Length: 317
Image (tube, rainbow, N blue to C red; front, side):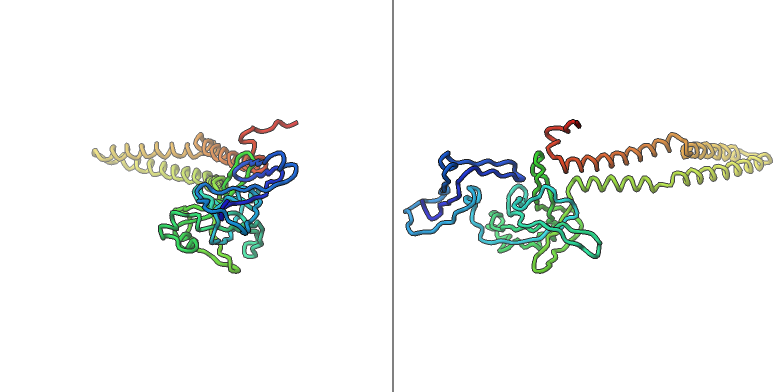
């Protein structure tokens, strides 16, 4: 035992469900029945001379006990406009695979300007866990959030476990993210957020459907028909004029006009309401709408039953 020995409560069975999955930890049968305390000294620690008359902290679990002590803490608030189902207090805050913090609170806040609600997530981060950056001198003290946000750092909700549907908060750099600034409200800095991949894909499908609906196929067909009628009149006038003219230029001009007439006729046929092109475009638009509708239904179902990705959809009774 040394000054760095860690102690934790070891009674019963410790079961936890998080974004990392299901974790079950047990001790001996005697500890389960009667209760107990376990301790461990980190392998990298030089035990040296055992200490006497020293107080130790009793942690809730082995994982908490063996965590490196964090000397500094930086709190942030995040605002999302999506469902927080699957996110819980204690969920990890991750930076490219490194856990640098945890979720401390989840709430909801009404925004009068939008007449809507923001889902708020409070997190705390530990800059000392970014060891290589700290030793390199690029992060001094706290995380320098203004510089990180200016370089594209955003917070995003991601799925940590497909079976349980648990979410975690990911911090990463998004170079194509819209410009944003760090806002401080009530003394708490707020990191800008970015929507998840599923939400972004749904928005893209909705934008495509709106653009297809906005194309005025009927008016385009009518305009092409009017242009063709005008061309017919022009050709008739040119033919009448050419009857009294001689020369090689007139037949060539007539040939060019006839080719133009054929082109416009093909265009008119293509733009008719019952043309295959119009029908194909409308069918494609309908398929996009159905795809967007199916995607929304799938996203809602997976939100309620994330285990379906592994087990499949249960049969209806």
